[in-house]
Length: 270
Ligand SMILES: C[S@@+](CC[C@H](N)C(=O)[O-])C[C@H]1O[C@@H](n2cnc3c(N)ncnc32)[C@H](O)[C@@H]1O
Image (tube, rainbow, N blue to C red):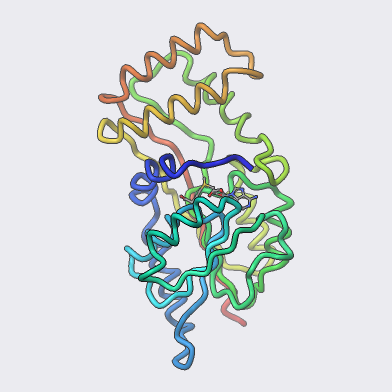
């Protein structure tokens, strides 16, 4: 598993929140509301790769209430942080578990399975096994912020295209799930979920970054430069020059990074 620091997750969270397609969230919450049972009003949401709880915070801000928040992550530090931040106000069940052991995931009774910034790290095999395990008659899926392979920088630099091509190849590296789907994640999930009988909607959720997110942009530039520094045939001096140029424009330039959100609802016929 790649490890994710609390600092990095905190840094990206505001950009993720702005980028999320709010209409898909509303649609999901409406669907969940219709399922409300007066005897047992708490609905169960299972957030895969929850980190410190960014999905929980986003959905709560957008009106989600009365959930059991079942957070699943391999990293105990991130789960502890989620409990520290929300354990007193919300009903949280934390599970430190490896998502790749799909048969043991705590999905029993789930009304919805959610994930943010996860499925581009995951593999086809993981998606197939997860879809096979989920009860497609009852459980919705909300998978937000899956990177789509597009990045536009302004101002442009002659090496942008080569860096992006290398970065997108690097996105396919195994992140603990087998070869990663990377930019193909949304399309793959959509097809497989439709084949499993779901009604699937997708919506663009690009990061639109500018000087106000300078720290995030700088971290991103650093991450991209590190990811492509070896193995992809980019000249190191040219890459250093690209990085310097990008950092020099981090406060004044713009950057758009493509992501997609997906909502899959059980077919109404059930
Ligand atoms: C990009 S982070 C996203 C975290 C959170 N959803 C967010 O949006 O802030 C991916 C998360 O998946 C978790 N993760 C990665 N591989 C995992 C695995 N095999 N089993 C469980 N969790 C995993 C990481 O620990 C991390 O919290």
